[in-house]
Image (cartoon, rainbow, N blue to C red; front, side):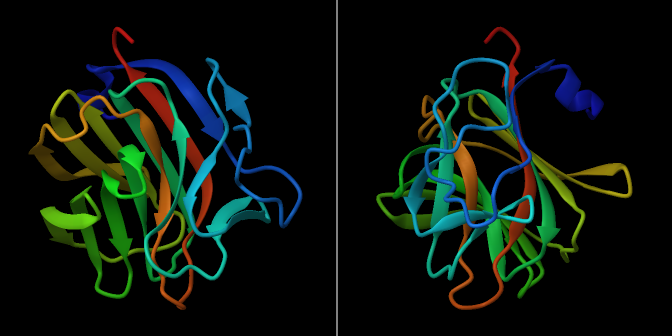
Length: 200
């Protein structure tokens, strides 16, 4: 972990999912491959999600499709590995339902990495940076209290991408993945991992 993460997170994980299983299996109710504490399985908030060749992906993604896990804690670091770059993917944080959460989007069409708050279905921009996307990238996003930070890793090097504070949904405990490709290519993820903040 980057040093800035290590100060605030235990080395022990909550879960690791590398999306093993039969091709075409629905992501809904799936239990992660490795659990370090009890948790429910994946819950599809919107759209259709499946396992394909060891990857999680939306099928025929339209607008803001997402799948989440209830991790039971709100102060969490999540990490995803991107195997296939689509049009518009992302990571969901602190969701209460499909209309209220934070999302960090990976937009290969516009070469952007953007953080939004979605409240009552409406999006508010938090921070945006220009960034191209490639297969094999790893993304981490942490939320501790009201602090949000993101990193990306390419070639073993971590780079801080976002840092901001916000109080919205700071006790919500659902985290996951999203796709909003609207008929274009979908993102595909080979891993989803989560760690709890110190003291959890």
